[in-house]
Image (cartoon, rainbow, N blue to C red; front, side):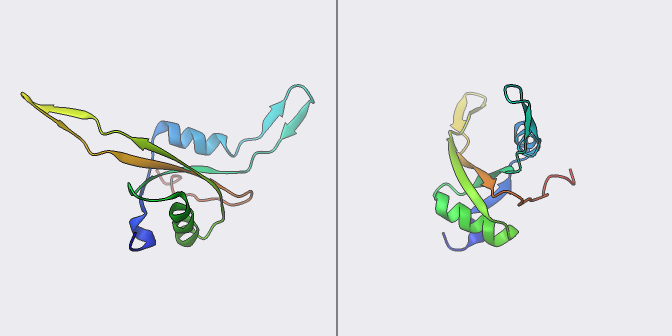
Length: 113
């Protein structure tokens, strides 16, 4: 990686990613103890470089957005098969990172959509 800007390609803005972001900030009700559990660890999804490590992703998010990162989970996706007539090809493989922020930290990149 040359710079931190090479690590993060784009935020993943899908229904699942936005739902995960919203659910990570909602309080949940514990039916056993009749208490409300406050969840304030925001989870965000980013498309990252194929050779980016968890440490590089953490450093990039902390430097760009000025927040503290608690956890980084990474998923590798295989590119889909595409057809153009009889010719069969593939889209490139890609990598997604789920970044969990420390309590009290927030990023509002998807609120303007």
